Amino acid sequence: MSSDVAAPGADLEANGLDERSLYLRRLVVRALEGGGRGHVGSSMSLIEIMRVLYDDILVYRPSEPEWSDRDRSILSKGHGCLALYVVLADKGFFPLEELDRFCHRTSILGGHPEAGKVPGVEASTGALGHGLPIGVGRAIAVRHQKRQSRVFVTMGDGEIDEGSVWEAALSANKHQLSNLTALIDCNKIQSAGRTSEILDLEPLADKWRSFGFAVAEVDGHDVNALRKILRSVPLDPGKPTTIICHTVKGKGIPFAEDDPEWHHKSSIRADVIRDLYAALERA
Amino acid sequence: MRQTCVNMVFELAKRDPRVFYIGSDLSPDIAARMTRDMPGRAFMEGVSEANMVGMAAGLAMEGYIPFAHTIAAFITRRCYEQVALDLCLHNLPVRLIGNGGGLVYAPLGPTHQAIEDIAIMRALPNMAVVAVSDADEMRRLMNQTLDWPGPIYIRLAKGGDPIVSRAENGFQIGRAIPMRSEAGASVALVSTGIMTKHALTAAELLSEQGFKTNVLHVHTVKPLDVEAIRRCIHGVRLLVTVEEHTIIGGLGSAVLDSLIDDMGRGAPAIRRLGIPDTFAKSYGSQDDLLETYGLRPAQISSTITEALRLMKAA
Image 1: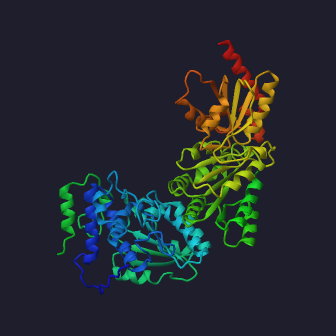
Image 2: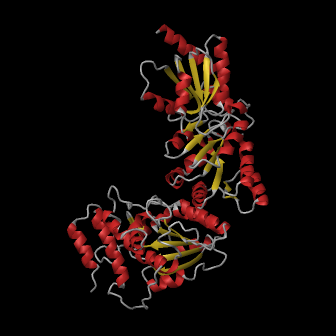
Image 3: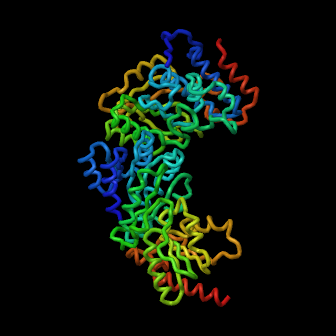
């Protein structure tokens, strides 16, 4: 666990991203180049959430991914895995060079993350709506074992269309899982278009409150705000927590930001890779 | 069998701290007893199968052995993706207990009948599928569930089913049990679940008519004991599979799948007896529907004698 100690507002580029955020995004582009494909927008919106979790919040040991007393972090929106992969690689769970082999036949890194293959990945996800029920089970388990471990489940906003998310929310409330935090990467766009048009989730915070969660909303690209709120979970000692992270799909890539077309790209050409890198250069 | 199964969960839980119980919205007694004696290890999670199974996966990831229990049709159909990915992809030791496999819920109609549960469960990598014949055999099965490494689907019958299993035959998941072996048998009946009782009765009827018959009880449809099937059908003219399940993808399909690649000209003729490709059109009792589909012992026996007659004529 390293700690990013950048002062508020320091080292920020015009798009509000500091060098570490730009670096992690460049690693995502490295994997996109290696695999020639990937969920671009879905990963870019997640970077600061993953970064802050692994830089500042989670307790873990990269050399011992199964360490019993670690915090459990489940990326339920598995299609955002590039954001997780680059952070895990940066932390030393596996070599950075593996990013160059993203989606290759013999790589451990596929288009959706698999537990047992990728050190640090807690659950195989990709089909949506699976992380929170698994997180409920794990939160009950670690509490039963009287561990201090916490469980974090990161979901997409499109993902929470799934009924299983709300089944799990009922259960988390019933069991008063204060050791469980749901993070929502709320970028307002799902695969086929805007969440407001496809299946409106609003009023989202009120929905989670009514399901018995303590809820906070935060700018999901504001590293300091994320640190502050995540350091204060559980927000209520008797309740599970939901943090709605307002994000921008494709964040950091001006020509991809807030554009459903950049949810996923296959056959990414070399000139597009060049453009992606150029967008992430410091001004 | 049903009561024995939940009682065994309680017994296993007392014996092994890894055992948890997750109920849906039935059998509140077991959850209450466990909560009383072993607080924090039994939950009633309501009518939310997807969460039940995901939650069971989460517990298993932390080293526990959860028994998730509800009606068979719901624990297989409703949450199939959770079963496939959360349990089978992760290869976790979760046990799914399905009440009312087959036609048990005849009076409740097709929504509650698990007629394709074996097919869809056995199609999943890593899943074991078990349908025992009676309460005594259930006890033997449950004693082995602590050591099986991956997920298991346990199909329950109605309860109060006649005891046909015998202690001396032992029990091992994945090991079929010869229930009746006759020298020079011309017919082999291969069955699972409570249909083994009907197969044994049918074998008696066939024997009375001079047709020597073997009966193999395949309590574990997956992994399938192919060697035992080969031994059972050695030298017979007719192999008949008998199951309270659609003929698409169940025991009969599994037997054919396993034999087809290496069966030469010496292969017996094969008939698959089961539920045709239809939802139930009527109510009544489980036996009523078995009769509708020709699965009562006398019907099984007469179907076989007719098949043998036609084979002889040919």
